Length: 277
Ligand code: C2E
Ligand code: MG
Ligand code: MG
Ligand code: MG
Image 1 (tube, rainbow, N blue to C red):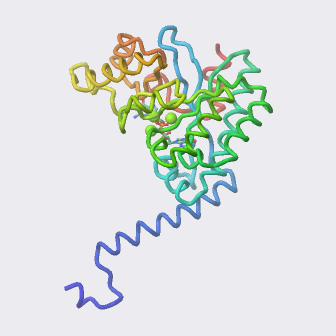
Image 2 (image 1 turned 90 degrees about the horizontal axis):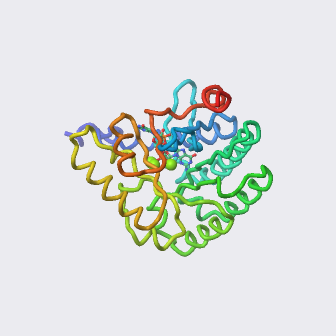
Image 3 (image 1 turned 120 degrees about the vertical axis):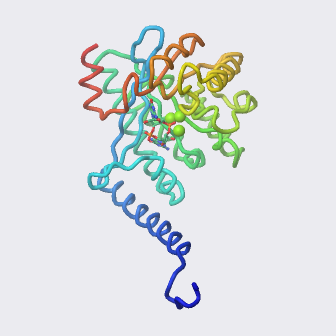
């Protein structure tokens, strides 16, 4: 049947493939444009100290407002990585995040931490370390307030280059956090091999209810594994009081999630948190 449709006819499969390819190309083009025209904006999600309920710091999360449509970083960060746009974008994100948190710390007399997501590609960019060093100096920020979030998959390839970069970042005094823990390899050897001091338990592990024994056991297991290594833990995706209760019971020090706050634009953070404290 497909043959009879002639040369210019595509099968549904081919059509789908082309659509997908097209949208990647279009998104890449639009992303390039967006970086140029500043359509990308950092949002900040408060990270809470569970004991006191105080805001300990923020995670910077990128948003792309594309003609009124907010595109999720899960959709465009991979495209930015494949096209190489991530390097320039990543440096902008670092500059912006360091600048914002240092402004807040000076203005409000705080020592907020700032968590910045670093893509695996950036760990192969020689400029990264330099840019961070310059940024810390320019904004007079204590390096230990800067937490660089990397994922475990970033540690699997180009191990030598990646490991050299990670050591340099560590030597700058920045903290390294392993993001999305519990979704990939979650290997204890990675936690020992690399100078990682923070582990972020992935939001997908948060129990669906208080009866969700499987997820509760998983969080409990991962938490005890991480605390044996004396690393600090941040739990993500706290949406319900029972998540917070579980974290308290497991002595997880820091939490982050919609239950406390969604990621917000800089000005909203200033209104909601910083000024009122
Ligand atoms: P991530 O670093 O693991 O960030 C956590 C994600 O969970 C964020 O999604 C955040 O908005 C979302 N989240 C926070 N609290 C909750 C909650 O209580 N429930 C649920 N369901 N979700 C919650 P977002 O902002 O869409 O970012 C997705 C991923 O995109 C990030 O995962 C990170 O891997 C990547 N990303 C975001 N911003 C950047 C960036 O500036 N640079 C790089 N390289 N990657 C980024
Ligand atoms: Mg993160
Ligand atoms: Mg995460
Ligand atoms: Mg993630």
